[in-house]
Length: 386
Image 1 (cartoon, one colour):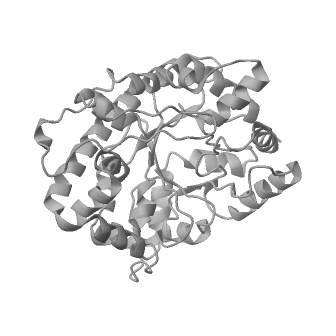
Image 2 (cartoon, rainbow, N blue to C red):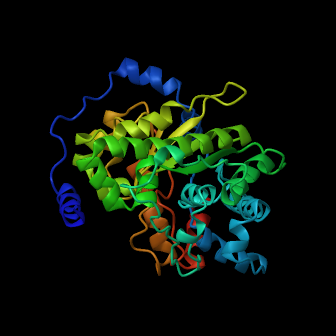
């Protein structure tokens, strides 16, 4: 079955997406939805001349830069397991670029690691060492789709998971930090499609969706419960927004997303996010690592306030389908590393120009990887700092 699934996945990336494209929202509906969008405040600040930028930089990359500038010797593991060190680095980054939005560092393994620990599968799901040369940690699939009793699986308690704890602690402490408390906090979560891929393996997960949809719904239902519990804890801790990361969507392809209604699973998670305890709306951002326009029809159905894609996606076209939403990104990183300062600045200017005329926040799209030298990251920050 693995070979069949692999062929289907490969073909789905090249077949043109559903021809029945959605119509753009009416001007009246788009205007009403825009007024409800908490990200619009940043668009308005840009229109008023403020320098708004949302860089996402890999933890290994930013640690290297921070260490060199501050004569520190923090390891990646030190920072991952210390909310205090993350705040220290984010405080420097926020000051360097005058960031209006800050975040605890992103790690797509947090939920999967919590599942492994809660269900005593840690030995089967070792988290690999993260190193500054970007040997990304990957969680080994550790459940068998045919034999596992899903009903017996525990939902991780975010207050007990060591990785989730640090994120929650970061959010709480920022609210008390005089240098950061007035900035908005975005927290990252793994999307249900990608989380299930980590639990079962991507081919196995999509194989279930294709050939045993009832079993797939059981598994994706479990993944959504894990994410829901984590999001609730993040909002309780002080998150002003949730950014869902769905890197697996690129491998699944637009046709499978649409034909199997997998977008519904993403919306199930987003629809449970409403307001914080003060009644203020929580911003909902969707990020996928895509570089073409084949996903426009399927992704425009996602009920998010903001969308973050990689360079190569035509935001102007997508914004016509979702004029109520904010486009975030998309700095062209493909030519980095080893670029001259002038080139980095030119690419930054191209990014800003490409966002002209649409509701947007300039940013990096996907995270800047640690294979990019610290010198160039500093140049990019210097460009955005004016």
